[in-house]
Image 1 (cartoon, rainbow, N blue to C red):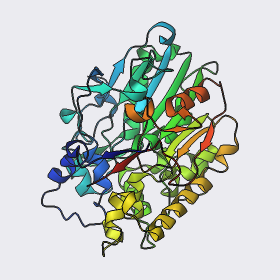
Image 2: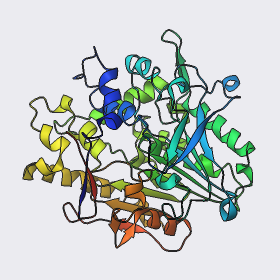
Image 3: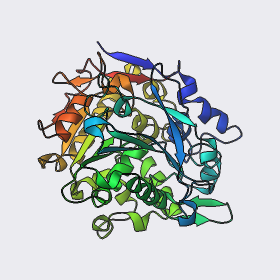
Image 4: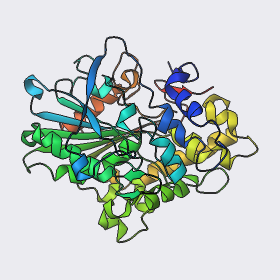
Amino acid sequence: MVKVLWVGIVIGIFFSNWVDGFEGYNLNETAMSLFETEAYGLSKATKVPNALMVGLTLIQGAGAKGAVCLDGTLPGYHWHRGHGSGANSWLIQLEGGGWCNNIRTCVYRKKTLRGSSTYMEKEIAFTGILSNKAEENPDFFNWNRVKLRYCDGASFAGDGENKAAQLQFRGQRIWLAAMEELLSKGMHSANQALLSGCSAGGLASILHCDEFRGLFPKATKVKCLSDAGMFLDVADVSGGHTLRNFFGGVVGLQGVRNNLPQICTDNLDPTSCFFPQNLIGNTKTPLFILNTAYDSWQVQSSLAPPSADPSGYWHDCRLNHEKCTPAQILFLQGFRNEMLMAIKHFSISKQNGLFINSCFAHCQTERQDTWFSVNSPVMGKKAIALAVGDWYYNRESVKAIDCPYPCDKSCHHLVFR
């Protein structure tokens, strides 16, 4: 049975921060649109019944390294210690939350928890891949589990500043300072480690995957997981390239170029090297790509944003896949085909893993209902948590690619209203 999450019902989680924050701005501008839906809407924390709540730790030595949030405040993380067989195992989850691509959007962002630790929650719920319960997170429940907060706006990859606007673009420095701090807290002796992330954090887990591998001795098992991080460089419904234009702003403004893999920038322009499809083929560390074939964020913000759909033809389909016309579904099937082409070479490697399910959703590792529950999404009767665990522990090769929509009845679709 297909499960549908009516996002309008939980509008406080997904949209209220976004809408309230943009009073007075022209939401029809290309640079805004729904890109800030993720950046500010998903940032709203919620109390989850019976979930482990983990406090925020600020990185006290970060300021001296210039490793600061957009507004100059200290970055932070949440850490729950491992125990038993997981005492020397480390999972680092990179938080997502969109990007800012120009001075105006970054100035706004620095007044939110996506740009300043001043506004971050003092504690957050650890669910899904961060859960401390074996019945919710069978393979990683007793590991050291860390969530690194996201307050730079360039997937932990920028390094620059704009003094006039009092903006610090220090994502790369935050990444390095956080890793140095965690190594000093015991991660240096890890016997196994996993770098993970959702959305903008999923992109970051790809960008930093080989760097993460380099932090450990060769004997340490190190792998990476990208959840909803396969942002594709494809045409939108008007034939334009909304996401490429947006990413170009992020890369140029925040000084990302020098922190992109040189093997890519030697052959392609910097903006192309911010797209995962141009990175995954050269990632040496084992990598697992978890993505929906019809990523709801990309449908709304890259494929059919209001700026590319002035007539509103895509409005209903963008919010609810069940309202798409046959022609619109055909267009979305084309997007799925682009996704499969992007991972074709990557999937050949035995060390890599895949779980591409045909759902209209975005981020499935931190939500308990999609990560591991009685009715979570499955392929071949295997839930996402079990697929990732089988791949990480080499119990089984996992290269799961779903049949096209609407064949998968286990999806937890996101529907907006």
